[in-house]
Length: 108
Image (cartoon, rainbow, N blue to C red; front, side):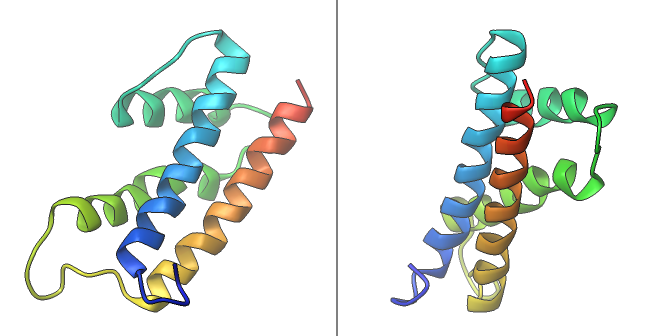
């Protein structure tokens, strides 16, 4: 997506990758499925806040990249586009987020 200048889509995909990873952790720990963005964000934050190796950046990833998804899906006009730099950073953060969630799942 980055190589063909689909920066909005790249930002959205970065968020959704993390969102689904968070859903997987919630399901593995609780056996429950949260479908809403708010529900997943809240439950994921609750699950990791006191866990071993708690990481503030891990907890902020979903809310920060949700803004990119919102921009891509709903905002119009000047300044409503995701830049190449922001999209690339979101993808890098998503990779780190998903890797960390995989570590937490492996520790189960």
